[in-house]
Length: 298
DNA sequence: AAAGGTACCAACCGCTCTCCT
DNA sequence: GAGGAGAGCGGTTGGTACCTT
Image 1 (cartoon, helix red, strand yellow):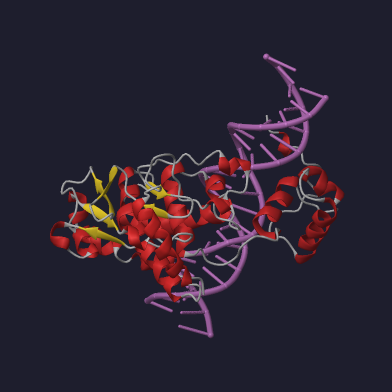
Image 2 (cartoon, helix red, strand yellow; image 1 turned 135 degrees about the horizontal axis):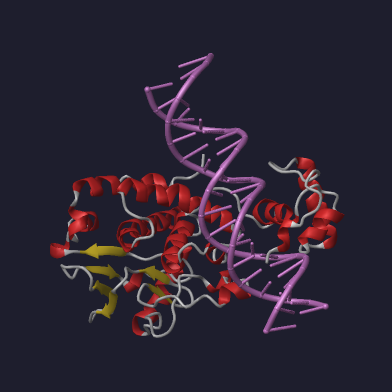
């Protein structure tokens, strides 16, 4: 199995950081001949690199559509959601973040997300941590996304969304009748990605354009006003996240999500008074320091 | 200003998967 | 169906930039 070790004369194989000349050589070769056949590419191009190394350099760094810079809150939100579904399937997750590489997402997860898990002394693969992300982190990211979208000049989407969502109040097509996903259909680029859209309908609401994040074990319900809410059956107080359908922003992540706890407490207060393990003061204070997690690169 | 610590990310490694003969 | 080669994936490491003391 795996013939990739047979890459040629090891004495001549270069390792370590790529030089500008090597980059240019690789770009030029791929421009002329296209990508693929990495081993023969490595030989023919004159690069003293393995095919694997060439492939990695191209896919993770040189490819023209690579997006550089910090992950946006929206992208972070997607990563959290998709990771909770698929685990460490980085390339699968990367399929849904155009311009982002699996390596970048993996690094983000390890350096930012797992760091928080360590601080909280929770196993980052545990259900508890997933629940933590869903209940604390993701709603806050949603807020960030909302803030960003309302600040951006293109916030006209809010206006358009109103009329669109009015339709949806009557036609609740985005409720989990079928498979729902967080991923905008526009990002479904490769066949590999398309096969993987069977997300758990309990955890995400998604129509062709809208999306929302819900905890595991949530039961989606509507009230007579047409508002959408869901109850988390795993929580003792039968607490309810409330999603105002009128605030769904079609075509963009935008929704007014607030925790409706006992006595209609503000979201932040409700959240730290929930299930037993969340009553721990140390936990709460640690978690609410997570703003650093979505800071932007300097 | 220097030293030590930390965070980030590019690159490597070993393994598995897929395709072709 | 078996075997080999290429491609891809996820885990890990090493270098460096940045931060703190």
